[in-house]
Figure (cartoon, rainbow, N blue to C red):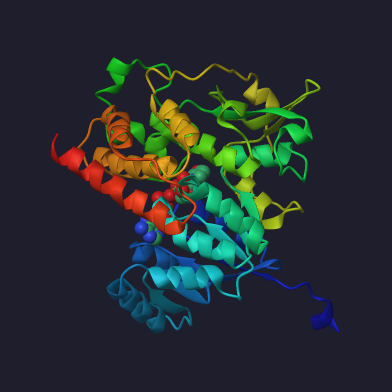
Length: 399
Ligand code: NAD
Ligand code: MG
């Protein structure tokens, strides 16, 4: 009978569906209706955008932060005769992340707000597609322990980590050296201000910082890419995902963003993953792994690319990279403090309250003021996050 032999479609929850990664995820899913069905789509306050997604993709559930927005969406969906159920609040995010109807959870909320639903998906043993690097940076040890303990499948979506994942042996836990890997080469475009001096950076505007040369992304990660904090967060992310020490991760500035990262082996081999800079490639990889599916991405035109350049990062003009490396080395709650201070600093920069170079300054001040504590309990991580945010706000108020 056809119904017995038809492959089961996988249920997918997309946390942060209205964002850059969320919409790219829906673009890939839409190409494969025989493989995937949408369980839930979530957004923060962008109710219009979520309404448009519900009209198009008809998920079982939709989640917004505020009940007033949820009521608005419910009414519009009822008028349109769409059966999507609408919920609101942080508890609803966790519910859709751990629901049995979803085998796959795309974690694409930006910032610390993604931590609890992402951890809920991990603890429910899902296939977790991790774009929300902040969650892992904040809670690395307990996050990775939960992945193992609950048998979750964690697939990195950040393009660099997805590339490294593809360049490593299938079984790569237990330390890089065991697998003959000597170094992870984390590529960085260098952002829109590559080559700028510290003095020139002082006058940078939010519009300039958000205009990334190679990738179109949400505002927060665009600013992080411009300060190189994104690469710092990615360095921490790589240490947790691949059991690497910070000194085993080399950041390589590669302005073309064609090589997405590399793994160097003890026999002299360097394995790289290349492709056009389009997040649908790592998203499709995560959705279908270990299979490969069409992502809607053009294949790489090597003759057009013509050349690949590499240079070391400038940690004098871009101190955030060093701050992140130091936070990883300090361990415990230090990465959570770094992340929280950075989130407040980026929001202040975007609001015109802080100059571009003030971002690293603020992060360093908060780091110096906050004690490093063990981060083996979620409460300790959340407390360090809250304390760092308060310290950052006090710093801003004094400017
Ligand atoms: P974005 O700003 O475009 O989208 C963020 C999404 O999260 C939106 O759907 C928004 O409604 C939701 N959201 C925001 N704040 C929220 C809150 N407090 N509670 C609940 N939901 C909230 O961001 P993005 O560029 O798609 O990035 C998402 C994540 O993926 C980030 O962690 C980023 O670092 C990571 N990432 C993005 C890219 C990229 O190319 N955009 C690449 C690698 C990694
Ligand atoms: Mg990245």
